[in-house]
Length: 147
Image (cartoon, rainbow, N blue to C red; front, side, top):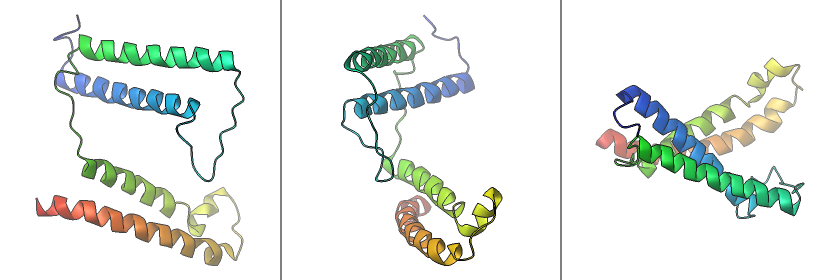
């Protein structure tokens, strides 16, 4: 149907959008089904009725069908992107590192006055996490530099 209607950048953009939508929908299905937790910092409280859950799951599954139909119509699934785990880990750790750096006491000043003791209480703890994230990043990055 939609074959040969997209140029290469358009195809790439559509592929990325559909990938992200598919990933988000599958994540919601897992979350609603109780197979996924957010984090130790967030507890999901189910405030939906059984009929609402059933409806939402039905709609989400249909969204997945539509995504796959679009993907097929535009031949996006003929050559699925292969993303190396190393690349996904490198991307994720880069984002985590950036977010953690932006959560240090000096950066929190953009939200208002910072308690004098915050640097001592928070920054060393964030540094421990950053060090672990950077250790992981260096493993996946080392192979890339050697290639």
